[in-house]
Length: 333
Image (tube, rainbow, N blue to C red; front, side, top):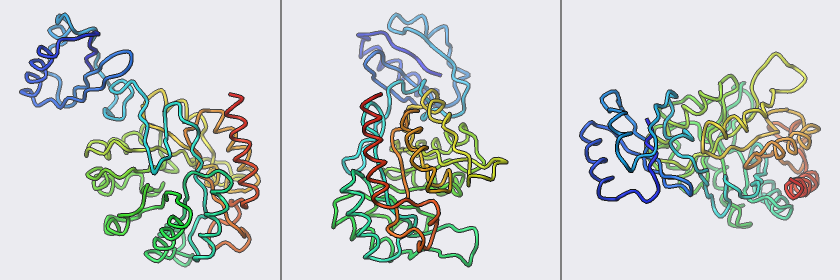
């Protein structure tokens, strides 16, 4: 349930109302926007009398919310949430954040060289996998803790904040210096992991599962937010369909749909979505035009020799060209 307050509501009477609601074991989420102030009532609201609330002279309207996600719901939080990560701002009217780097960290020379290249081309964050969830147990699984150390070296060298994927709760201590923790598609419904990340305050990049709906993505975000961590960034990375020409099917309609349903920022991963470097530029520009708050793109200095996902990785010069086109498109829009 949400209670929309009138402008210049009396603080004392609002405090009395909140005290009464708390006696009913209702959690209250208060959001002050530029146009209105909204009280989000979370819990069993069956005993809350809507007519009594509407009769209060400082209440403008009362609405029941049918969606099971509350904290991630735009009705509870009409203003866009902006999540800041090391100076990069996701959401609202901020410019599209560009995140770039290799699928996997392979060596110090590789990750540091790519980091310098993508920063020079306009990237605001560095991505790189240290722990790699692979379909086959015989494929490269990442450098693990050593890979995290190499990412941190690249961060010290370039100043770029880093994003990398966590696979298990037991790894959390290793991520103390990671700026943005990524929860991959395979872990989108690892609810125990989401609850643990919700008890911290480190920003989380939550990727949509390859066979999950938008509402299921928002429910996973709700797991994190219900623990107290509102620093959640959503990521559309393609869903599995009957199509075989591309690795996945990039659901660009998820961008406006998420913006309608939720206040959380949403970014797009065109690399995993298509699985082909030749499609990355087109899908990057399409995602920008659709209103994505950011893009996470795989960049490798030698894709043909990459230990992971070489076919979908672009080169640093290609990223520089795409980054320039993104900025031109933003200006035109």
